[in-house]
Image (tube, rainbow, N blue to C red; front, side):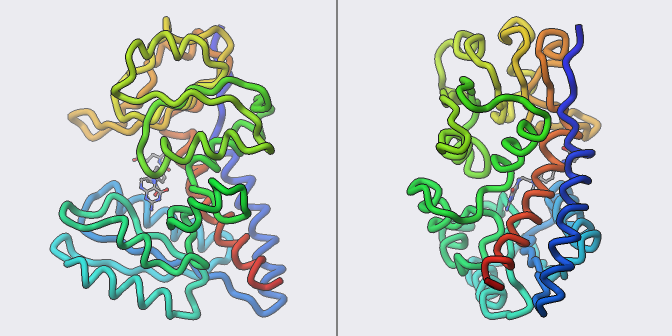
Length: 284
Ligand SMILES: Nc1nc2c(c(=O)[nH]1)N[C@@H](CN(C=O)c1ccc(C(=O)N[C@@H](CCC(=O)O)C(=O)O)cc1)CN2
């Protein structure tokens, strides 16, 4: 038996169509949402993600403000762009594309952003709100994962979720999102230093694989019927994505979020949700 697909492309398209109506309603009140992006350096993957975010904005009626700096940009030059977006009234929300080049203090850049314009949920104040159970923007990929599961009817309430990874955009915030009363999951956080990862994975109703280790999750590690979301990105010698989940897992799991085509497109859609929600909050 083969797993059902958690189709991120189709689900993202549905979310974007819902957002178009909400953007129209904002415009009718005289509010034009505008997403800013800060891209530093020439990593082709980051450029692709940022261009995709602006294509999405055009589709739903959100204005775009694109800022680019060379790989050699200094901390001060990046901070000047962040300050400009903080002060720019046309920018209602923005993101700094990660990772930043080596030598740049990422946490200092994130902390300098106006928290009211944090579209990524990665400002220390937004992460603090998440810990405290207050309303604020959620980090886009954890938000995307919850929404992808919810819209496919996969039960999160009471589920045992094993998250593999501890990076800033997924692994760290994921358990905070899943253990909120509204999601009510029980979470085990694993990472590349976990002893006997397979024993933890075997217990999971839902697996979120975000370690960046090709084919880390193998078919024999997965409980039959579990939902498995592949969020790891490694590249083979031809530049093709190799995920954290072995293709054979689809024969054991009940649900699989493929990579590409699963959580990635949903991450972009949830960024737009954050932009629209912030504009709605500001419009009152
Ligand atoms: N400031 C941020 N930086 C990064 C984030 C983030 O949420 N905020 N997440 C990732 C990159 N990312 C968004 O920025 C992202 C990753 C993947 C996709 C996506 O649609 N992927 C496609 C495949 C694309 C390919 O072939 O390379 C898919 O999964 O189908 C969108 C956005 C790190 N940085």
